[in-house]
Length: 312
Ligand code: CP
Image 1 (cartoon, rainbow, N blue to C red):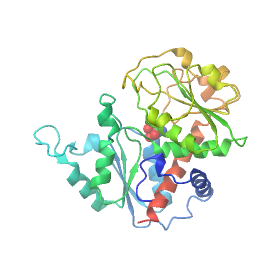
Image 2 (cartoon, rainbow, N blue to C red):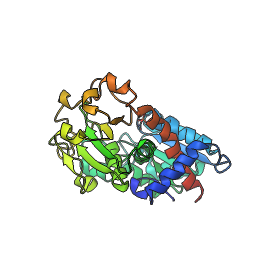
Image 3 (cartoon, helix red, strand yellow):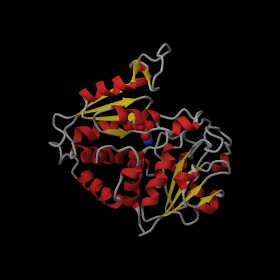
């Protein structure tokens, strides 16, 4: 594998899950594989889990991780072709990506969407510019439209906790005060579509994800109906896709409560706003898998880096 930028880069999700579980049992077994190799982590946006778990994964493989907050610390990067650079940008992605490629054997990038320009966001211009102008493999640490490290993590976590052959998994929208990206929901949907699960999405009217992502997955606008017999409820807020980037609904009735959850396991990628997205009683109960999900971020990243290292 050269790059990991989408859930579609996973050829066989069941094999990947099995490999990740093996890594989790012996995290240091490939410590020689990444010796003298450098992972560059470039953050255009904030992070706790991705930043630390991807570094941890690199260290488990014997790699040297180096990290930069691009938005705060680097020169402003220009992505436009042929731009007269007389504005706020000081360095073109052509030079920036080429230079970073000399310091790093793999480059990992986090760059969120604007949520104001759908066409530009969907072009994935930051991630694709790195893919185009870097001479080393690129890993997506959450881009405008996808968070494939999180999607892989969530598939691993569901596989670990599934009690039936074909569990019912619900992706549910929950309220939030800010406009949030679609990336986590998109990648989770794509991961579930590759797994042997009964998968449905619950969201209010006006909040359907891109039809290119949801495909044939049932979308239900009644949360209680969707939660019936659920084994896993994966919760995430996202802004409207049709009315792009807008917050159309903050109805607290969509918040996840212990009563609504029933016997299902609760999942969220974190960070999560307590008592807005989900009540304390859920997060503080044995039903919550959020800490285990965060732990699995390391093994998902480690698997991806391992596959790329083996191909260098
Ligand atoms: N889930 C996730 O990506 O967390 P961070 O934004 O903290 O990296």
